[in-house]
Every structure is written in structure tokens, then in C-alpha cells.
Length: 292
Ligand code: HEC
Image (cartoon, rainbow, N blue to C red; front, side, top):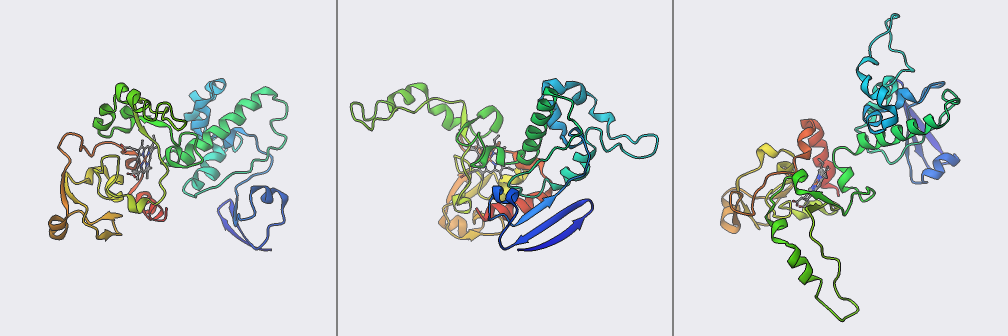
């Protein structure tokens, strides 16, 4: 086994080539090729928990309410590395852009006398880290997320409501009568309040996007202000820069079908989740989405 180590500040990135002999790493999966070591000996759990984690666990409300004061420097001019956020901010937050598969947590003895309170802190650590890694897209679209296949309400996703409204409870009931008396009869149609979170496999070929095909490219989906109000669908030349089919210009107009987003059912509003990311993050995300 070859190991190459690279030091970035206090974080060590370990690249493993060939077989992995460590049992811990084995438990993670033999195909794992990169480990990032972000650790510091003799620390408590508090400095590693994210702000989101503290806010999610009611038993830790007193810490959650005082988060603003922890990163302040002490009399010696330094930040106390055992206080909340100190190590999260410095050693975990910089890792958020990495596509991390899993985390190994080893807790030493510093919190050993705390009993059940440690359980609450562990919950805050796990939920908080999950939240920061999943905040952008994976919480709804990763096949490992409990939300996959579940419905996001139209109030949250904000896309055109026409399709949802046209699927009435009566329609769901009558669709459940299809195949009555047969072993394969339909029975699972139901009225919901939104649209489903689906996996994003083969995404590049699924343009135009959203249930009504109202957004021609992935770039337009990630930059809501730049979504075109009118474009042309079904011209089959691909646009790899913007990730979707060519939807404007003379040729698209000649071979395509005009799509006007101001018509009923055609709105291109909503699903603005990408807008919280920086331009650079969105460009990286686009490259990643091309590979799905
Ligand atoms: C809160 C849940 C949620 C989050 C977070 C979320 N999405 Fe979605 N996404 C949805 C839902 C629901 C739809 C279907 C909406 C519709 O069709 O009206 C959707 C649709 C899509 C589609 C269209 C798929 C297709 O075949 O037309 C893409 C692409 C997409 N999301 C990418 C992303 C990306 C990239 C992010 C992160 C920047 C993201 N989503 C964040 C819930 C979410």
C-alpha cells in the first residue's frame, strides 16, 4: 500500500493507493482512496459541533443562544480551542466543499464524566454535520437521503402549481380503480401538496428541466435571474456549456417549438436552491451535474 500525505494547514490529506490494511478504513469500504485527517488530540466534543447542530438539539439551547460570543479572542489574544465552534470553524468548515462519503469520529476522554448529556452533544454533532454537507442539493436528491422519493410542498419548491392542482383527489381515486379485480390493480395514487424529490441520474439528457420543462438548461436552473422567458424546445443540438439542448437562435427557432413561460402551467419560477451558492460553487456544481 502506498500512502501520499499532503499537509494543508492543520488538515492532512492522505491518499491511499492499492490495498488498505487498516481495519477502520476497511469498514468504510476497500474502494476508499482518500482520507482526510482533521483531528486534534485531547479536545472536547463542543468545539467540533456546527452552529446548525446546536440549534437542532433543544437540550443544548443555552449554547445555541450564545454562539456569537464563542469565537471572540480571550485575554491571551487567542480563541480557546475547547470552546464551541473553535474547531468546527477552523478544521471542519473548510472541508464542506469536498464530496465526503463518510466520517469517522473518535472521542477521547475529555467529556467522560458527562453521562447522558454526551448523547445530546453527539446528536448535535451528527445532525449538524449532516445538515452542512447536505444543505445545497443532496438532502433532497441523493439516493441515500431519507427525503428521496418524498414530496417537497409547492410552497417550498415554488414551481408552477398547475400540474399539482390538476391532479385532484377525485382523479387519484379513479386512478386507483384501474385494474380493479386484478392482482396488479393500482392502489397507491394519492393527492399530495407538492412535487417529488427524484434522483438526478442521466440528468444531462433530461433537459428541459422541471416537471413542465420550463427551464432549458442546468445553468438557467442554477441562475434563476437568467432563466429565459421564451425559448424553443425539441431542437436536438446539445449545448455542453449550459448543459441542455440549444434553445435560442435561428436554428432552434426553425426546428423547435416555442415555449412561453407566461402561459398558464408554463411558469419557470421556483426551485431557487442554487441561488444561495457563490458563482464559483455553481460552476463547479454544473461540472459535477454533467457527470451524473
Ligand atoms: C427541498 C428539496 C430540494 C432541494 C434542496 C433541491 N431540490 Fe432539486 N428538485 C426538488 C423538487 C421537488 C424538484 C421537482 C420540481 C418540479 O419539477 O416542479 C426538483 C427538481 C430538480 C431538477 C430537475 C430535474 C428534471 O429532470 O427536470 C434538477 C436538475 C434539480 N432539482 C437539481 C437540484 C440542485 C442542483 C440542487 C442544489 C442546488 C437542488 N436541486 C436542490 C427538490 C429539491
